[in-house]
Image (cartoon, rainbow, N blue to C red; front, side, top):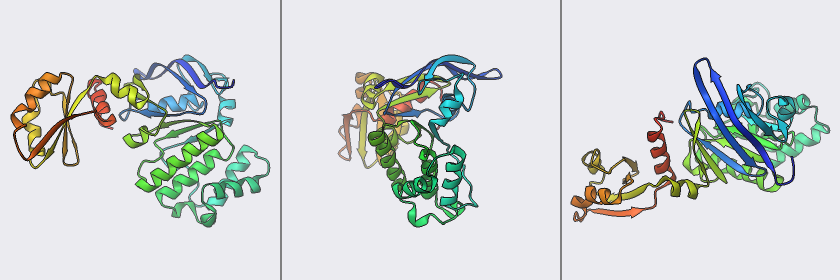
Length: 310
């Protein structure tokens, strides 16, 4: 890769399975050292895209590079410099943490394997558990082991496919701290698919895929601003009961619950004001306009593009 270039730079990326087009001619250019998030409903093409980029799946069309290599003809070189973490734990449950890392180090033919494994165990806080069987670990510790194994060979690119699914909030936060350390201190480029909005907001850029097409990309602020969405919140006793009354009203595109708060969204401020006007004098309700959240925008994108629930 050239200095300050793109770790990933592909155009027209396409994959078909029979008559179904899973990825439909998308373009992706990810600068080195950045953390990008892939979002979209299940079956939108996120995993298929990731697998094509790291050489695990052959593309039907497209051109470009990954880590400076032709992504279609130099897959083996890309694999050597990429760490890929799947949603499902894919290491050996009847081996200890250390034995798993020892095995991965041998597969890659890494020099100084013992010292390297020692360093990795320490870096990811696995020293005290190194002799514990992987099958006995909780989801968060399995995730940490998987990250250790994926980064043991010092990859330049890290591809993470919903790595925090089913993991508790603290483990998710710790995981993301590790990801940003790897990116910030070691210059690793990270592409991660996720369903969590708080994780998407931790990324430098996000890409929303639906039906194999990219329908939005940019920073969180860019995507929210570009949505054209207008959102009002309704708080107080009886806020939930307003939902069926507002649904179907002209200008109300969708309604979402956020705890006890109601988000009422659309594109025409006057129509939204008109829909909410009968309830503004209710002393038990507080109605105010607010900036739409990232989740509001993705609900809108999902509905506009006919995506299934994620």
